Image 1 (cartoon, one colour):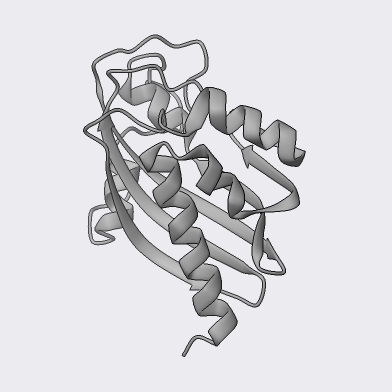
Image 2 (spheres, one colour):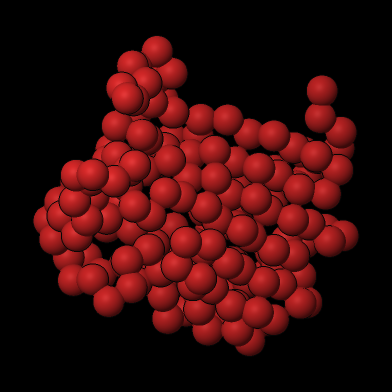
Length: 172
């Protein structure tokens, strides 16, 4: 059973993500601490401090998060004393520039399915950081920029296995 604080952290995180998706920069930033940081680990996209995070959100994420057909499904959530960890399955068609995910890559029109882990830290009653992880090689395979031939990488099947663990594992 979650404590009152844990419920408040989850509610704030959900408000934060909702504001990002709605394109509401001021509400997004109002959920953040005085000295936040954001790191999309595979691409190192993000920001440090209120000004850096605000600029990143304004120029690259809030209202530009994903193409219009994005679907996000929560797979699991763990809530600790000062952080929330969310595991997501995200699918979309790469029809717009998504520079935090694919910097310098023009839209390919390809379908993408990805498993994402978001670690959200809290300081007091605000979000102090977000660390966001995904398998970049899998995304690059799906949009045609990386061939899996001879490499220990996969495409959408790695994200699908997060949704359905009974799918077969990789054959060696």
